[in-house]
Length: 260
Image (cartoon, rainbow, N blue to C red; front, side):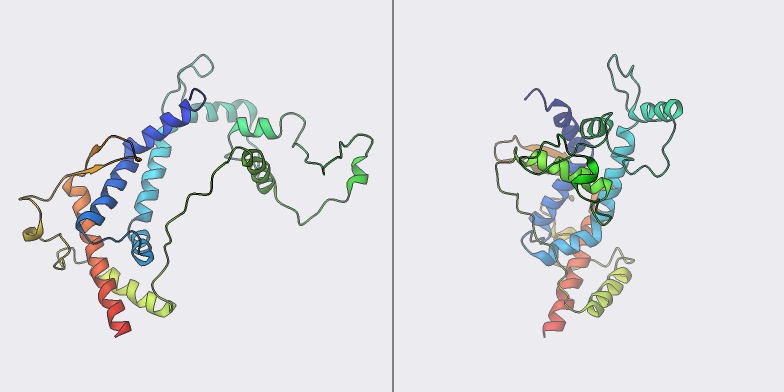
């Protein structure tokens, strides 16, 4: 595909900079540390433990990406941050701009110089109809951002020829919010004791497959992709694995006590 090279390149960078390491780590949790990816409670626990760290990596990548130079005659090796700053310097800054943060190409396509495109009912061209005759505006209608999202969604719908990709379910295993709060309070205290590791979860030294804790994990992108060897340095990733098994062991015992 020649038209998707930019986004394909961006996805390569996302993968090599942080996403592949997280995927390899989650693969390791399933292979060595009792993660059941089909268990909604396990996925909920993953979110509680690691979602904020994963989001931090996303934001860090975003900041670094916005500082990388873009080659070409139009950009002169300026970074996205440079272009944004120069644009604000020469054109000014809108106050309370509802389209702030949306790519200029998207704004130009859907708004241009004549304002937002108007979607009319079927068989109505708008010719000979004054704007006052087309019905009063709905004060409770969609916002500018929502209207833009609706327009983009309508344009893209014709290009989607497959069913939505199923998303793994994640939900709290606690029906009672008070029980969930009690569990999270216990978990917070437990995680302050990083050496309190449970047995039979693959983190104790005598449970390792080899002499040392592994520092690589192999993943396979897609069904036909080549196997990738991903480095997971022990100082960064073993403490996360330890947190996972501590939390999983506590969750298992907590639920057993409730059900018992």
